[in-house]
Length: 381
Ligand SMILES: Cc1ncc(COP(=O)(O)O)c(C=O)c1O
Image 1 (cartoon, rainbow, N blue to C red):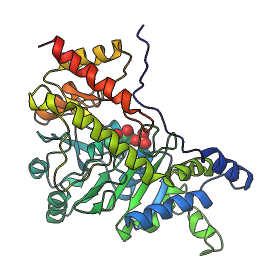
Image 2 (image 1 turned 180 degrees about the vertical axis):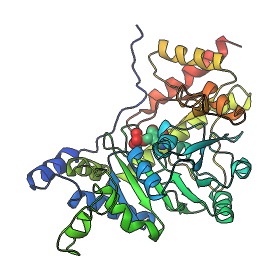
Image 3 (image 1 turned 45 degrees about the vertical axis):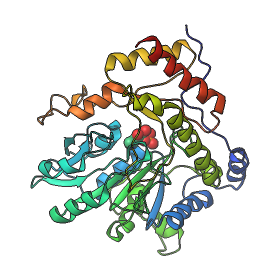
Image 4 (image 1 turned 90 degrees about the vertical axis):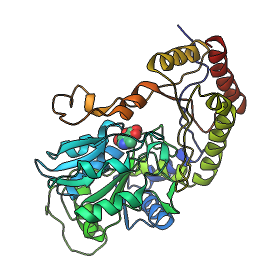
């Protein structure tokens, strides 16, 4: 068995997590929507200009809330890139939607914005741009289509904290958005997420869906003198214990981002010769986007080569991984899929490698990873 010396991910602890959890536990208010929840939500609203932020127990939950708020009904169509995580589509499928899968760009795993219009029909209700690796989709093009056809835009910003499109924070552009704080994300709370509402039409209802279909949030603010069942919903809010952990992370966002971007740069500098020789393709950050240091990936020439590199790294104690498998070909959806071949999505499924990426990854470890990749190419050319 290969011994792993460099893992793919290691959740970073800022040092304050247990302190804030302790405070939450002994405050006597450990259910949801307490002081830490509100502090985290306010942080997103103030820093990123989001109209209403609600913590959830995952990004998947936040996307499910979006699907309910968008009033998705049986037969409605939702356009989602095939190269994404299951939840980007699943949240809408649960409400009865038909998913119309879109292909990725040739220069980036994100949705090909120029191919969306041909997928729009009279049944289309929502477009879901996924900001892959925290790099913005071309939102102007997507918003233009949404306005033209009267559609909603729900950003899957799972990986996109503190990233921008033409200076605008991701997650603040679409009608709604969903963030993830899963342990692999820049800011984590083990599992966790956040729903961002940017269209005032949805703010009031979002709180009700969040709190099991009741107007309990209004009651806690003293706006009504009793609360009751007013709509559908679920228990989407996390406990204060999770919010306390998250706050310890958010407080350190700038420092975390700075280090993660340095790691990204070191990978890029170290591997750019390979890209010059066309051995691999490295990430492209379009002019309109920023890099939030979420992930470093490279694209190999073939699935075979990708798998060989993964096992070469593993033999050398380095755990790198591939990423999504095209959803239109998944066991769950392939029988239902009636669209075209999605060549780019399949290429990223076959050829993309994600390299180890976490705050505490040391400079010498990154050097070792780069040299091990170069060593593969020297031996195989
Ligand atoms: C693009 C995307 N959307 C949604 C999710 C789901 O996030 P969560 O695990 O917080 O539910 C992920 C998970 O990594 C993701 O990559």
